[in-house]
Amino acid sequence: MILACPACDTRYAVPDSAIGAEGRTVRCARCRHSWFQEGSELDLETLEQDGSAKVEPAQRQPWHDVPPIGANDESEDKSAGRSQFAAEPPFRPRRNPLKMWGMAASLFAAISVGTIAAVSYAGLPDWVPVSRPTFAMNEPDLVLEFPASQQDRRTLPDGSEYFGVAGEIKNVGHETKAVPPVLIVLYDSRNRKVYNWEILPRQGRLQPGETLSINEAITDLPKSAKFAEIGWSPS
Image 1 (cartoon, one colour):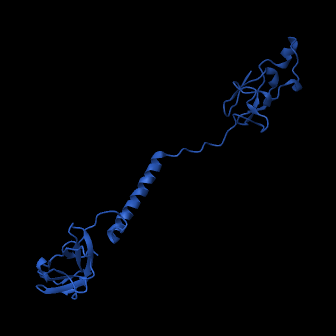
Image 2: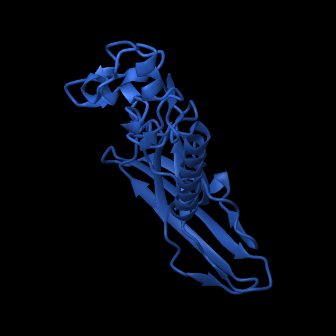
Image 3: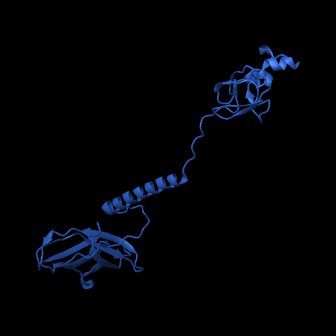
């Protein structure tokens, strides 16, 4: 006869003699569910009248020795006392690639925003290999006038190199303006920077129409310096 577990629907091929006419309690080897299995419709008395062998309880095949339909003799894990069809822990869930890419994109965006904010506040570090402007942008209403005719380059009697510049800063606007530092950059004959120095004006602010004169000189500069350019310091 065929037994079917009411809980998991696993089916077993069982000899009628294992259940008997009066039925018996059986248990599923897969899910461990127990139920009372009714016997065959042919009662024991009919079998005896027909000359069939009497089925004794001792002759019944134990339920746990009956393999499920389609299972082989190796399906039962005898050492552990449980079937290979017994329920196993759930598989570890697979990682979601879209979720991982989303997290990576969010992290990259956060790092980018932080980097932009840091550069905007403090500027690029000196070790970053990018081209930086020599001078700062022009200051509104402040005019630098350092004509080349007032650049003095000569060798002193002691052999040291002397370079002097003279000029003016004018406030041509209608408001008082703060005067930033002035940068003087020296170049050689190949237009390569060979020296620079910063001048801090002696007067920090200029009234509208006011002019500030500057006259600076430096010694011990490189002998290769030929001419100067003057602008606002980027610092």
